[in-house]
Amino acid sequence: MSNSKLYKGSLTTIILKLLSENDKMYGYEITQKVKELTNGELKITEGALYPSLHKLEADGLLDVEVAKVDNRMRKYYKLTESGTKETANKLSELENYIKTMQALVNPKFSLE
Amino acid sequence: MEVLSKEEIQFIDAYLKNSDVRFADIRMEMVDHVASEIEVRMSEARSDFYDTFKWYMAENKLSLLKQNRNYLMESEKKLFKQMLRNLYSLQGSLLVIVVLGLVGILFEFMSSKYVLMFPVSICILAMTVYFGLTRKTRVRFSSLERIGFYLIFLPQYIGIALNYFVDGPLGGYSYIFVVLSVLIPVLLLQLGFQNFQFYKNKYQAIS
Image (cartoon, rainbow over all chains, first blue to last red; front, side):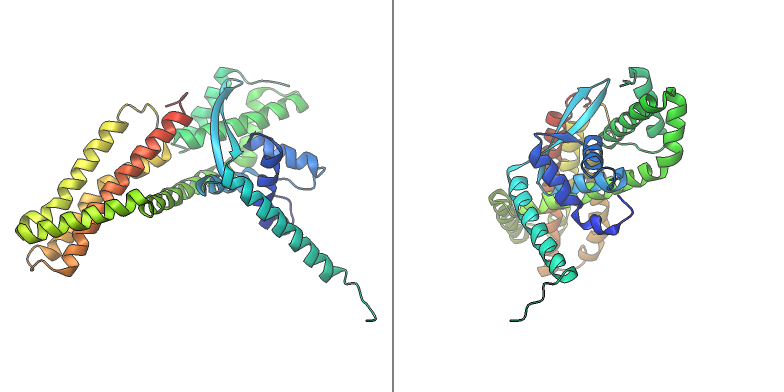
């Protein structure tokens, strides 16, 4: 993960969001996609990514598929039905969090 | 983009296996991650496989081993949650009712010696069925091995605990003990079947 701990709590949401935009993804692909989307600002290490993926799998939010690619086996992750619902919840939670933080950091004062 | 050869992939796999990443399901994902990163680095730095591999491992070996331990913990939690889900299902409720009734009947009509032997017999039966089921699996899978470990451990725990009940009269505590000692191996066996099927379907190429 990047040097900032602020991103840590949002890792699950990031993974779910990426998987909602792609049919299926594998671990390394997720790390590279995040790096690309954030222009290198956010780097997810395998030590942070895989435990999150495995937890989401254990919770029934992700389904897995194993295929042979480039002389090796590759484990793909995709959203389950409950994973799709959870993605919407998580994104809504994150939006509210961002709004709250914005209100705290940049409060708009009024004379009323 | 460079693509690693089959031999290079086998080299990474053997290295991780020798570094105590024992289970095929964990190692498989790690091999893919390491190989993908090495391919990118080889293309960018125009370096050879072994130099890039050494460079990568010097940086990341500790993190990979930590990931291995985390996966095992997550695997245990997954099994526990799955077992609870099974227990709270309709099938699970029926199983509890059947076991409660069956043990109740045993308590009514049999002597304590035979009643207390019943859980051990169920454990041994569950263990035999489970090892018969998984004996043809060529590689070691984390969840299957954990279930096997619990099934081996359970009769020993039950054997030790039986000493507390064997001399006393059959009553409330011994009833609860026998019910749990019958229920747990049956639930573990059910978990074993589900996980065996999961690995058979999802990890077909390596199982």
